[in-house]
Image (tube, rainbow, N blue to C red; front, top):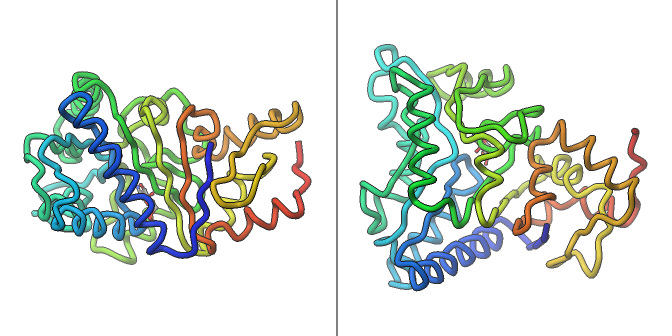
Length: 284
Ligand code: GLP
């Protein structure tokens, strides 16, 4: 896993957008299309702004881009009419921040349908489509404060596929306070689905993410400088520590992926750098 520590959120967004644009150009040249896995939440908003800017400047085209979003809330459509058009839903969020501003073909956009009558069939259809498209070339992920990826909460099976998952009480409460809905479940790619992406790009910014980013980096020898540092497994004790963390922190799967990069700003990297200078003893 590679780490790229940048100064602030703007630099994080620029670096991530640049990487996404590079993969779009490379794969479009190579095979005529590119398959992206996309994320929601506040972290990717500036990444999408940057991609929209690059698109307007004709630096990147979405004409041959196929997308799959990580997750979507499940709400009762009769109780929340129009939910999937509002930007609190992940459908609406993606339209507002990216899809409405670029030349992506509507038929190439895949966001799970939270209102589908048969949720299992919807999840199977989604997995099948990813396969049909030849897999995901680059998956963008944010990270929850507890390490969740998409809605794969701690202790999610590492080989899990797209399915309906229960949200934690904390997530339900946050939504109830912020919005007018309280979805209790969501449809989400599984960790196994995410892990199959050819490249994973994790983005995180802000001090709230410092503890989980610190956890993710802990137990690992940091070579070189913090910038673009390559983190490697160095001894059996580290390997045991990783195995333990991996169970609780879903983001640990990035450690085992052959092409994963985290782009984090200095605030989010705060505890990672401390641990680098002063490694924390980890309980077994
Ligand atoms: C939600 C999403 C995740 C996202 C996380 C963090 O739970 N399902 O995909 O990474 O929130 O969100 P934020 O970027 O707002 O911190």
